[in-house]
Amino acid sequence: MAEVVIVENAAAAGALVATEIVELIDRRPDAVLGLATGSTPLPVYLALRTQLAGHDVSQVRGFALDEYVGIDPAHPESYRSVITREVVEPLGLDPRRIHVPNGAEATIQHAGDDYEAAIAAAGGVDLQILGIGTDGHIGFNEPGSSFASQTRVKTLTEQTREDNARFFDSIDDVPRHCITQGLGTILKARHLVLLAFGEGKAQAVADAVEGPLTAFLPGSAIQLHPHATVVVDEAAASRLRLADYYRYTFANKPSWQGI
Ligand code: GLP
Image (tube, rainbow, N blue to C red; front, top):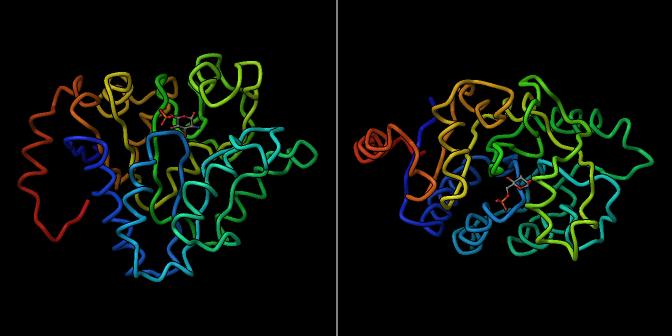
């Protein structure tokens, strides 16, 4: 099962995951990070600003999970813009080493295959950061996505469009299609770190970690991964049946292990 770490708040989660990433980069200067968008990973990126100071990040590589189809890359809410604003610029990463799926309509038919080839050429993702949607989606893999799926175009559910409308002037501006790493792509990363905060994510977290394996709840795919870590606050952990066991396990974890 995934290791579940219950922390006091989002800032503590950010600090914990940032420490793991800094150790990875120190060990492997050209580490390949799997970058997620949405509000959930922001505390990690914020903590990295401080924790990475003085460390060499010039070789760090990265692959974003997903992108909207047909959005102008310069639009402030394209995932290309979000990754540039929240990750590349504040952390001083080399933009040429940070990749985002290409959502341009002209090349969309082979954009998924191109992205898979680029990840493979980089040697795969070392640490994949993940959020989770209220319907259990990871990346933009909506309910029903195959556990074997690769990077491809998906149609967003109305719920996801409504959830993401807060970033746009109106829901009519939220694209209907996206290009996302598949669940099979995500499962190839060497370490998955899924974060979730707040009561609104509690059911999705419980279903992903303790529910049955089902494509209907894409986050449950993490149960197939040999090294998956779920970092949640108390509210997001509130529906976990084995919460006490997770607390006990983490409190008694050997210090050499990391997350
Ligand atoms: C979007 C992203 C996902 C993210 C999800 C949750 O759909 N494509 O990668 O996990 O939103 O967003 P938030 O973290 O803002 O709750």
